[in-house]
Image (cartoon, rainbow, N blue to C red):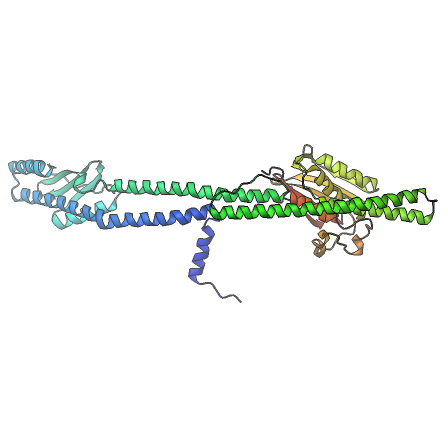
Length: 453
């Protein structure tokens, strides 16, 4: 019994589900995330330790000037005294002062984008000014509006915003943002180049798996080039092995055909008799076996891609079925086609159709186009195969139970050869229960099977 997960484990699983799955995304995260954390930390330290301290000193200076003017006016509230204070404030403090007689303080104000400015000014005025006050740092773009309640009304102060706010702080943020964007762009460029080399290697490997020979040159980082060279070496060895296998079986087939031809000629010249007919049947079976071995060995190598009409393909396969005396139905939409190796695909469909005809009295060939793949289905009304034997049926030279083992002329390569062709195109062949009661073989081919580089 598994032990319950702890909270850190649960949190890590939730984070892991949201992490990028591609190499490009993960590499970008590894590079950009530390840079972003560093930039955020530096920005926070700057604002908390420097920018906020500077703003606090500025607001305290303005609050002290406001408190000095308010006390000076309340000690001598004459008009000429107010004029002197106003002139001094304008000339020496760069503050405009006006008296709004019988005025009242506003009730609300706009909130500043930088909360620390309002907080610092609020604290400084509260410490220095004993009377009720009100201020607004957002009403005017370049000025701060401060109002203090006095007995005669409201004293209004208009000061430049740089008296309470380090206006160049946003420039620091801009530079940090530009630096982060520049570093991210450089990281994107270099990571993309490295990932592109891996993607090309993967595309070349996939194309080679479909039997398409592509020109590929190792490039990228040293490790990627090393993997590419290993792939090219493996590709060369596999191609040499396939060529040797094909040449060997072709030679064996050629060598066997010569004595078979002599035997057929000798039997043709012999007097007709029951043993002679039996020997002719045996020779025909041997020729069929040799052809099957050679077709399986040849696979799909070297055959070029071309446009294949699915209806014509199934009609050709259906002719072999009707010649065997089996009832046939074909259901294919008009205009359905795919880029594939025509000869190999025809052999695969013919193998599936003849296999169905050998075990059933009715065969149905159909094709349908999906969003990503084209499916060719072959149904029969024969005895079928147990589901646990579906994969075993694809084994080369395999023989199943007696119910499906009545095709004595076969060599056990039909399904294996069909799956080999389908997988070489990037698809597959699977077996299921047929609606007719027997076996259904489904040959799936991706729509991009022929679009390999």
